[in-house]
Length: 120
Image (cartoon, rainbow, N blue to C red):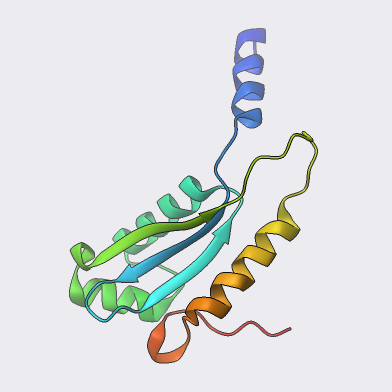
């Protein structure tokens, strides 16, 4: 790999990616799948790709996507973490706190959503 390619790769790795909590909402029945990620754009693209390909890990969400159509689902960013001044700051704890906050607030379990309660 030449120096230019190495520098571009390093720049890409260091580029800021929005982090936070998102939801995939079924606008027909208002059920949601709530999640959190250190890379919101990446995780939303992954969900969209898996759903379009018919192999999403959440079988209930996949079944309803196929039954109701992609036009009845929206992808929403609910909350984002603010970038800290410290370059080596670990955002995992903040993200976990934010995810628990939204899970408690929206309760996307059972008839209300596609999430399963996490075992603590």
